[in-house]
Amino acid sequence: MAYPYSSSESGRKETVAAPGKLWKRIPPERRLESCVSFWQEDEAVEQQAEALMAIASHFKFRTKSVRALQLEKKARYLASLPGVPDSVAGRVLVAYHLAHQRPMLAAFLDALGMPHDNGVLNAEKLTPPPAERLKEAAEKLRVAFPAADVDLYFETLVGQDSDTWGGLAEFVGGGEPK
Image: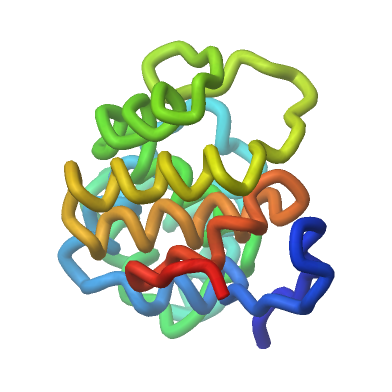
């Protein structure tokens, strides 16, 4: 099931994949890379606990045994799960982008004119960027970075905060606004 949301700009319903479904579409090698980043994050404790329980349940391990595994093994087990909770998938995607896509994040926020610290927004409360500025920033990103990376980033943003980033759904797949 996808998350439906109303685009404040157009008033119509858009559909974006839930983080769990989006995470499943990531190629296996990138999923593994994402999971390594996830387990290295200090701020993902709650989602890591949830991931430990999902691994233990799926592979019929004790949670204590999973917790004691080496980082690479935990990452491989998590990456191989047929499904993960949206909260875990969302955090895995964020961890991946923060660890491996900082230049793209920074370029996008620079193009929007939004203050950030190396690709991480500084603002507590965000307001949706104007549609025209969002379009210009999306176009700049598409020229500078691989399309699959840009699509994953846009879908991650929309999945995390559709109120702020919902307008990006129109640009996934290189699309033009309808």
